[in-house]
Amino acid sequence: MDRRNYDTCVYQKVCSLYPEATILFNQKVPGRYSRANRQCDILVQESLSGPNILFDAKYRYRRTDIQHVKEFISLIGDIGCDTGVLVASKGYTDDALSEAKQGSHVFDLELVSFEELEHCYKAITYQISGKLALELRSPLGWTYEPQIDPYGAMVFYPKEYYRAEASGKLEFLSLHNWYPSDGQTIDALIEQQSQVVREKYPGDILIHYEKTAAFSGEAIVRFVRIETLEAFEITAYLSIGKAAVYFSMFTPSNMMLRSLSKLKRVVANARLIEKTTADASHCT
Image (cartoon, rainbow, N blue to C red; front, side, top):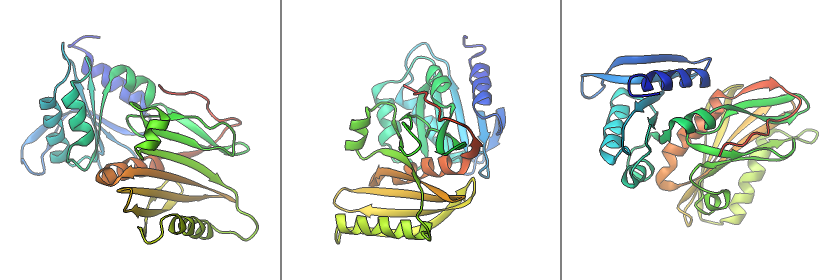
């Protein structure tokens, strides 16, 4: 793999990772603000409307710096994607990584190597009950700890952290099963969990609800803003037959929109499959 075929190698890898998506390669896209035709390496359209993931292949002989990251941020905003992935051959400078993590952009942005793209974005499974499972993807740029048993949680967090560090920074996503007793509904589960939060943070939270697209139709999303922690807990609830699953995302307040984008993509693009055991692979 060299400068002449790096873009093609990244494109082929993206195609293998998103076999059911519409993928455009080396296309000009009109800018919303610049009014210019912008060069885009790889545009991925999943089940959500619009070309919502932009991959940019950057073959360089030295680390990619903050200027390239800022140029990519400008491109993402101009063509209207909600997620961008920069794939660089020689890694990134510290200021480039900081800009991607802490910058003022509201969309999801990840900086990865080709090797990380290959190993960390594969589909994984989460067992619900018996042969019923979810096939889903880890949020872009995140790793995960697999489900130990059908009643256990699966936890996702940024690849640059250990799990305990991600918990301390309030930056992680956990996926849980729920098996209702006779007569219980998912609305009852949501209210029960909301009451627990009210008791844990009395007078210190704001809660509201909305709906989002999901593989099974719609999911109920609960937003809990915790003032003293300067953080949000965003939870998406989905009914699946007689069971339910819920995805709980914890995020600092200043990263809420980016974290919400991650959560919505995971929920919208998961799908039900039949599988006897959960996948035990772990991306590191």
